[in-house]
Length: 584
Image (cartoon, rainbow, N blue to C red):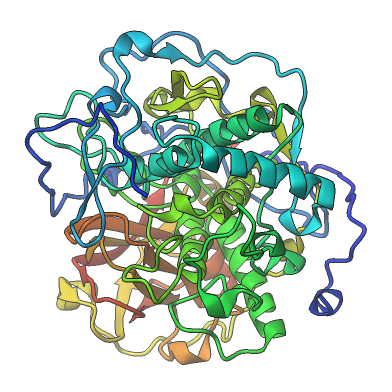
């Protein structure tokens, strides 16, 4: 593989990233809502994407291995075109890109199965125009929320206040914009061409997660610019991956401000953010939580993001059942930040703690700006986007700053400079926070095989001995394919918060935390629909993990699953290869 050339970029911050320094610190009515038969829920799905991980040159596209040769750097994110270029023309009639039934929106549902009208204002096909990328006149810089000044804050408040004062029938209103997330995430749309079979389009837990939210923030930001008549205005990002930003940004705490939302966890308004939050507050010191946050960020952005499948999530094509599997960042910290921010006194952690209501809190857009920044950062570190035409030609619909409906394609959001924004340069201390093993080259204890245990309900800690396809792979083999642990047939209630942790070669998981290599990650679900059983798959990259644990020559590895919330049923655990990694 060609060596990665890390960008040399300077920091423009006046503060140090050191931890020691930091410590001193109404429902609208929508006339185009489709009436008629309500959708039914597909409770299970097969492992239809298993071949995505086994065959090189599959429809997942190609990418190079994400490899950090030099980590003691500061990186600024400037957008740029990474991976695929912008293509013209319409999708092939024989392809399977996804698109929502935008002109036939129907009621979404909350976790209690209550119908919610989240549909946008009425539009016909004749009203809709395609988004045409054009060279922006200016590049707006999205600032870190903890660094904004009073002039910026005044303009930001004005933009949100004006949006709040618009009629809910205006698609630019704050209410209508909040409903966008509800419609796309809680069952407001079927897949275009599959309405009769009632196949839902859900933008979570798949390769649609990042591009949908990038477009969503793009139009929200354009509307803000329109409200204040300033095309240099940009949304702030919640810099939760950097110690100075690991608090709820103070700009959202003024109860008299349009940026305020009353449905937030009252005990988290001034405490350190726990990126591994499980529903109960950590008893660790602030300094320990910060360190653990940095360890988690390294795992999710480096160890667990070596391929496009691992970073973006699994493929989701037209005609397939939703929820194929989330990528690393969507799983965590994205989901944990939602749950940490929402009010636990509400039935489903509203507002931020449930997807149907998350957009009602202005901090949602700040949170997702940093999620989007992770995509730009991953590209800067060498990660390359899918080149799969089904991903590039998947599309969404939004209303622009002129309140006009537009159709957008994934292929047109890959270059943030074309979209007219970049991110403020900040420290990235997690690049120096690689976890270390608790033990290396351990003698594996006797344990049952997966076939002796699964399928089963995960009600208590389960440990199994999983055979590897091959031990002691060559350097070239590792460059060609990431070794992954696949947990399949995960059946869970999408209306509930769900989490379980996954360990490698660790039979006493209480001894290993985020700072240890043995804890490879978690499966997490934020409530995003009414109570129903969905089935998905979760994979974890383990090539680096096995090397760090001195287990590269092991024929089998020990896998431990630890439930942390609602129980789930699991059908199988195995080790396979993700061949979307390509050698030079």
